[in-house]
Length: 225
Image (tube, rainbow, N blue to C red; front, side, top):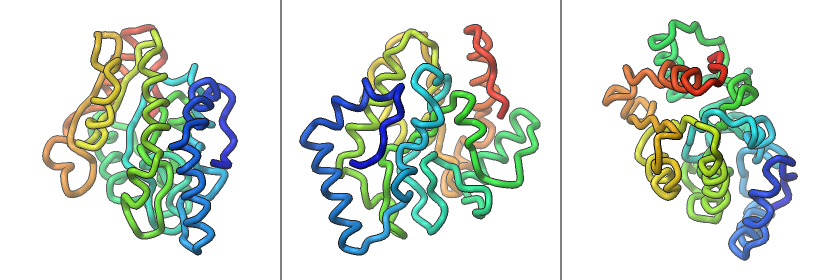
């Protein structure tokens, strides 16, 4: 994998990236691109979530499945799109819940970098995807890398909120025992914000106010959502 590792994450990722599985992932990605397949996000953006949210600044982890697979959408943060790109339905529903929960008027764009810079790690399980093929890079090796990231956050003494929207994110969290081992961390579980499931319990789950109450109770500044 040719991406530059952000400094704070090097102790976490360098051992994982030295494994045969990670090397196989890197070779596979190069072969896919050499074969003319379009991979999102583009090179240079694939570790953007880690770049914007150093390990020692993580307050919240939001877990996504894989990047958006339409042209121009994915830029390295789960659920987020660049400002000039139309907001996907799941993000529209996230903003609806934000408005209902905290009375926050969302911005007129879908770029969530302002969350990431405050300590919200917006991490997908797989960090790449083939154009127009959702889930196409699942099971290719990213999972070991992103599991290591989540485990490193959960292993800290710092109380952290883990946002687990949908069964996929909840399954990933189940592989990281430290998330549920004590009262140190908060795990918010609800259905996914997708239009297919948002009305089954995502709407009304109040994740944003619950996160901020948790952070403040542990002496941390709330997120300006």
